[in-house]
Image (cartoon, helix red, strand yellow):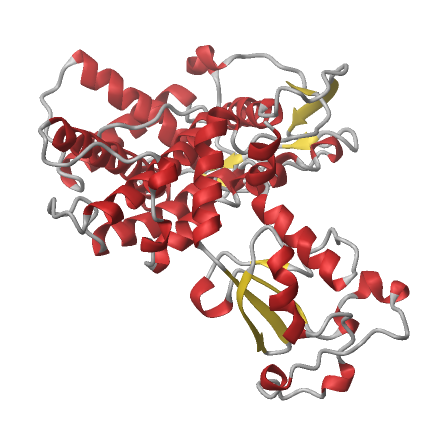
Length: 433
């Protein structure tokens, strides 16, 4: 398990390598920024050039620290390099990075920040391998206290949704998702006595988790709609969207009625978790612009992945494609499209960081399950652009098969992340939409 666990925290290890090379402590703030946007232009990681922007380590500054002095790079900066006070020259960073878990290909200075660009093939190989080998444990928290979550003055369960108002429904869903996140940890974590955390509409202690109200179109707490009514309406909405927007044509039957009932409940989960827990959520029964647009987009792309793999496997079974090559035979240098690297670096490599950030401060009453929803939405946006732009299932010409194999491995690991995130939200994978 040691190798896989280390590779699971690839991004963490990169930041640790940077700090060690710069002879600075690992900071809790975001002074070293891990990028999620414009990676092709800005690189994967950046940090300030000037020591004055590292406030937490100024007190540790050594008077003999050398300045950044690589002439070719410094010429790109309009700032006075005498103000720079990092211990390692930019010119030496590429050489130093050969000892890192992921070496550099380039170092640039952009607006007083050092931007790092990494070799990608190794990241593809080791991250996807780690994702597959750890399976359901990929992204799990390594060390964490054991918490048990309770609703303050608990009265109902989700099975009693005919009696539940929407605010209480939100608390029940929050409780389930937060507990899923808290319980998502590696098996070797210590199993000490659990610490009780309480979820409430009012903060009655420093460690209680505050849940905002569900409000109506007038900005008032909704005390009219029941959970049952919202579930029923969203089930109808999801069926209409599947039929009109995504072209699904199925005759009404008990199985399909049950399927869309599940989709409706899943849509409500997405809807009620879209904001920070302590913020209010606005719900309008007939306004689909916020309610179901995001959920249906997420579910559709989950189904799109499932359909892609079914078609790939059908073509393999029919002898059109050869069987998928094992991962150790894959040439990941063939993955040279910007979305391919973005899907890996932002969503697969950073998935463990996402999970940790959701519950890192749970003991202080701060949780962020809404990160899961925004993560899925952003990931689907990138995947959707990639899927429309790149033909994945190419004609079976021998020179195209290696690239096809690399893409299938990448997308299978993406699907694993997709399904795990849905599982944490209490939603089953979507196979058809």
